[in-house]
Amino acid sequence: MKILIVGAGAVGFNLARQLSKEGYDISVVERDQELVKRITEKMDVFVVSGSASSPAVLEEAGIKNADMVLAVTNSDEINMVVCTLAQCYGVKTKIARIRNPEFTDELSILHQNEFHIDYVVNPERITINSILNIIGTPGAIYVADFTEGDILLRGFNVPDDAPIVGKKLSELKEVGSSDSFLIVAIQRSDEMVIPTGETKLMPRDNIFVLVAREALPYFLPMVNRRADEVEKVIIYGVNRASLELAKKLEEQKIGVTIIEPDKEKTQQAATALDKTVVLQGSVLDIDLLKDASIDTADFFVAVSESEQTNILSSLLAKKLGAKKAIVLTVDPAFIPIINSLGMDIVINPRLITVGSILQHIRRGHTLSVVKFQHSEAEAMELIAEEDSKIVGKPLRNITFPQGSILGAIVREGVMQIPTGNTTIKPGESVIVFALPNAIEKVQSLFFNRKD
Image (cartoon, rainbow, N blue to C red; front, side, top):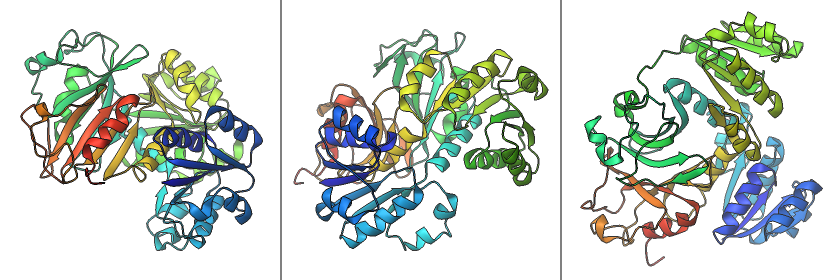
């Protein structure tokens, strides 16, 4: 398959790297010379320098022969124009990253497909949902939802006094029922590992758990002896995402304070929000943070456009008593740095966007792809195709790739934890966690062998 990627920022770069590794024929259009140089030096893909809205540039990049166009520049308008032009060239599938809710709401013109966009990915909406899910799940540091069967993926940092500390995974039945959850990965220091029954859970492990939605309240006490209700959230930065987040929190009767240095933006926030307290000033001003009662904040959420200020303000907020800090960073390279500073939760909208786009590209029936920020590992929701290697025989008779684990099956809408005796039926949804070297091998188990 030939894929044309328009835009070589963090989203385009990561898509090009991932898809070229998987054997797709990739070409990239980018006008920024620094980005062109970076992608040319880092990977073997065809790059054209120029304006994405130019038919001549698109033709040079091979749009006439492209099976798919991924329009992921920082401009919604350019992405829409690219998809419209791609339709003129007969491109079968067009995917666009669109951030403005005026274009992505259900009543928007995009839903009438006037711009010929087959799939729209809105990173701001995904980011807001991720933050809300984290705030709504006591102790969570990572969240993702799957499309089938109300199955959740949740990440937790294991406290020293958690009931599961020192337990082998095979012993968890002594703590609680393990029929509705499975720990599929553990991040220990900088290493992501696939656990076995003999793996012992240690304090400060980051564990990633597949759990049925209705079973989540029963799992939470295993990692949190006390789960306090969220009453106060302080947000740094006024933008579309923070205003929408504040509105959602207001609806949940959570007290919200927004801090913003720009006078015009503070006025905008005060007009748009009903119950939120809006403070103008520097988020690095200790007196201002104290005036905002930072020591009573359950969460400090830094979502401004300034990466450095997000990081510094979160560190300061934690020092002054905020229970947890959520840091938004648009540069994936900052993630390990922020984690090394002991930050609670890091959210990278661009990596989340990559996962959302990959599900529309992968061969076979891929319902969703979750990219992990701590590594290049993935959780994939796949449909088992008829006549694929995975169906029709007990799992104990199937050689599963090293570095992967089959986490759950959705059978008649209900999550089931598989055993060696489990036989997968055609059409069933299966969730698999895989380290980078196992991703392609896992996928091959679910494809129709004739294909």
